[in-house]
Length: 231
Image (cartoon, rainbow, N blue to C red):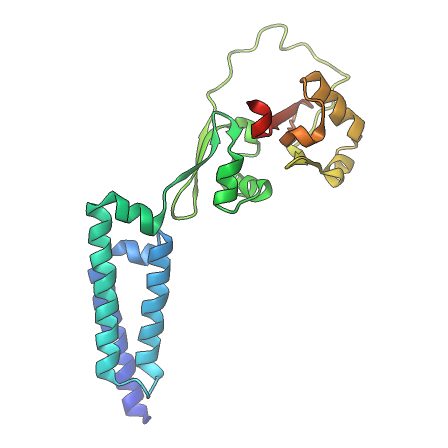
């Protein structure tokens, strides 16, 4: 391949990609869904082949780009007109937290664990699961969060200082999927027996009955029971 041919192929690939991307719309650029992500990668790969692969003729390269772009545009139109097509291709949003409770089955469906869920919440400036009323995992991989309404005003009883209750600077998980997180307990200078006592006070006989639990800033324990225990 000569330099002039390479420059020509690069120019054709560049212009063709610009035109086709404009036709496909901004949604393709933002890679909002799995389908858009795959489509964008595929078009980029075909464009790169058109630019530097001398075994691929310019004609065939342009035809490949046009056909793939046509598939994307047609599927995008079907996506808008027919919800069933949209759900099949893109999936549906998943409710991961409902009324303050973690939906374990939904977490498994989207292949997330509690640590990953907490990481997504922190990106929304939410540092405790107990602050969340609803959390929805969108089809583009982002998390939409609705926080719980502000608590009722404090009364005099709520304002009493309890010197025996530990106070911490951050919400910290101590149980995840029925297993104690010993490293976090050590960081908080707490014993496993303290966790067990808190669970027993809440009417929960075993750590294995808890899906998730975290120590709040005020020293209390937020508990999310396993689904089968709630029934």
